[in-house]
Length: 121
Length: 111
Image 1 (spheres, each protein chain N blue to C red):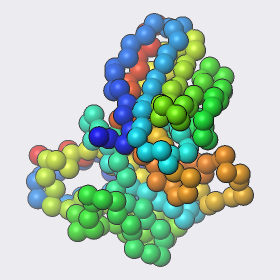
Image 2: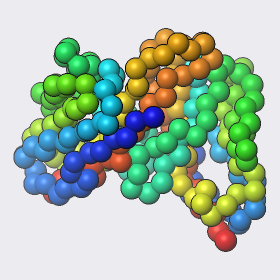
Image 3: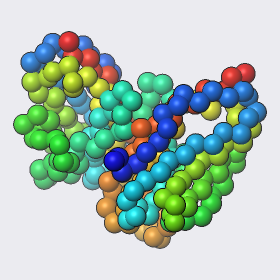
Image 4: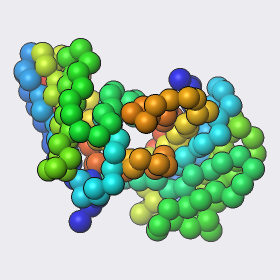
């Protein structure tokens, strides 16, 4: 398993500003993911962040809006830039532990952080 | 059409009831089917998963997958107030690790 912490746990921000969210893991992991959970909506993947390479963004999400850093194997940041009220959401990071030998019927479980609750006024 | 559809509820049941939670999906390439439980102000935690079709049981929880109907279910027997949470179904394809989630069903078990 993996223990994940996020900072801040919540914030209220003004329109047009930016917020950087930190994700810290208690063990080294290769794969880290950033999700958005809007009220009444599905948990949606924003991007995958591997250490040492550029983040891979999902359709509808762009680097200029959600720049991501991944400086080492235990830490990542997501910045929400030029915020608008539509960015109000919970942002979660998740990690996938290093892959181990497993059969095709087994998954490599993802572990989630507690989330950052963002309100944009 | 969303890739994964899930009734958001809320679903309110008395303690001891059998609960049925369901999701439908459209992508026939999904092979792994997961149920996550999310308590208020916490991140989702994996409850159980199934590979391909069939049933899987773990204590009071049973997961079912019907790939021919693109329909998955989670049954909770003898529900407890501590089961009150949001239940998210999630799916992924055979290769790759992208999870596609349903919107989550809010469950309230009344004592």
